[in-house]
Length: 278
Image (cartoon, rainbow, N blue to C red; front, side):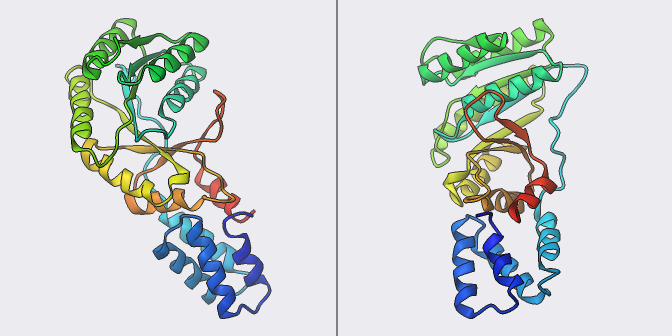
């Protein structure tokens, strides 16, 4: 059942008991919308006529979403470094490959940097994707300095005149300051050669409200510019997309909804909102 379906089934009936409202509230909180936003949605629903409730809530939600551009930044005269960051297990490496494929399909030349040097499987996975997509992957030795890999990759991307350099960074707990400082070092190494155009934080939608905590920490540490939301199911945990944009003011750029290379979609606010009422 879509996020707001139960709510509208009740509202359209014309008479909603307090116990019904409590059940609706619980269901919306379970969808990771967050208590504050749930109470705002219910308040609007209670004030609206049954025939106006959907449009009233849709307009309110649209106002909560980020007003910033969802397009990837691009400087036509230089390479465009993009860092892919996040905690372990969110799907960073797969998301990096998907974005690389998306950019290549749109006529760009790409270089990939396998900067998750502490996890051999991540390097191998990115190299496998690079082979399949015919995209060069710059990698170092196991447990080597990620900043050194990124420096080499940036140099290579400049020499190859790539349009984009995508950097798959090591997964790190947002609560570990040392790991976050290391990520900051990677940022500084790149920016000595070229300004970073995007830092995309990959968030697993099933982590719920904890994803917002992650976002705030990464924003403070490295200046995140947008999000990639993975495992987003509008029928179960769709509220996190709304909540994270409302809390941070930053845009979701992509949705990852599967393991295949083409399982990546550009986030379209109107289509997403419409899906919540489907």
